[in-house]
Image 1 (cartoon, rainbow, N blue to C red):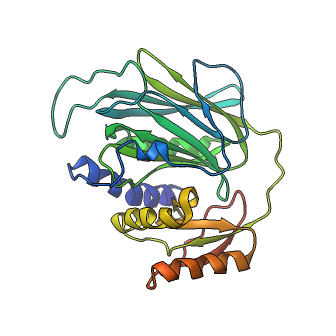
Image 2: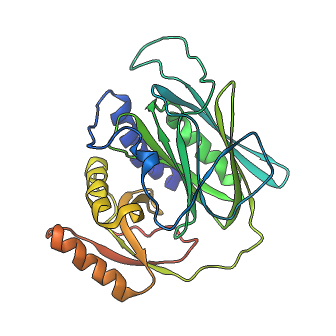
Length: 287
């Protein structure tokens, strides 16, 4: 497990350190794009302030305020009875290499949480974020998560925008979750507990790239594919921690082959593969 965590953090943090080093990425969209993408056939619910005790098995939730200059300062995990909690604190970004006083935000920056399957995960998109201080501590956090009953690991995703980021919580099994925000200081809290319904969904056929594509190339490819497949495109890591881009997942092999044909009509040199994957399976390493 420790070797896998090392791979995950080495690959994923490479993308984050590009951002932290001061390199800016330009999108044709605004910095709020990470939280404004359309998710077909899904209703986006509003995140409540304070814990309500209402858990969901799936869904998409949006909260926070539109702002800029946020820093994802810390991420913690703890168990509370039969529940596990991820807590994310949001501070004012101090700038690249500055020793300015770190001041907590009063309210969280705009964020969107989407539940996913194949593999089972929660994807948190964060807008208005310029700093990701907490990502440097993900290695030690993921080592701690070896004791978790519900969470495999956390990993960041490359976003081609210097004011946005994504954090993925990879789950071991179906879990019910509650997300809420806390103010003064600003925090995003995700509570998890074992889902009562452990029935597995049928496997899918994932249309994806090979493992280990360069992080910048993966970010550009994701944006290109979004124009074809909209919200179904996502970046993932495989069971060895190497990143890849998934164009979509389908119920039949024939549908997956048709999707590859559609991609090649626009991108003739695209090298796409088909992987059959169960709901709770970590993606395979496909070189």
